[in-house]
Length: 145
Image (cartoon, rainbow, N blue to C red; front, side, top):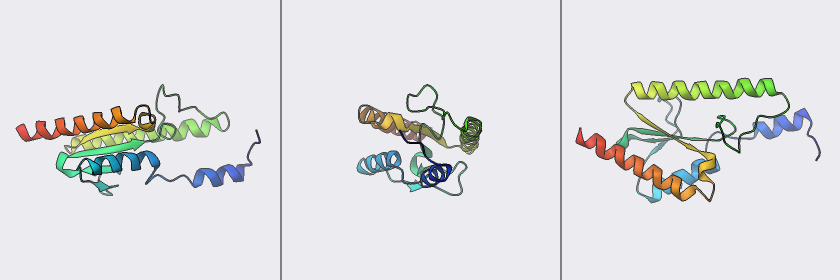
């Protein structure tokens, strides 16, 4: 296997986007087909959630296993080169995620995290049905109060 130069690695890594990722699009399409209406990447909410369902007062974060350091996930492996940089970056990402969720909770918002590995074809239907169940539970619980 050929190794890449630092310039090539930089080029490939900088091309990775944080919005409209394949896992996010899977969740968005599924929610829309089920009749859920949402806003994307709300700039005024902490953590800039990927999907915001105002009616359910719920924010959904669709996280990539590598970028958010999904613990005990076979799709997350710490790189063997420049390890100190990646450990620090992933730790910062986890801390930022946690802080954003705390701030949302203080504002009265529910948060749901959907992991990239849970959207693989073998688990996708179960994950999305669980997401729908959770949203309906939140909606019904909030209406009873």
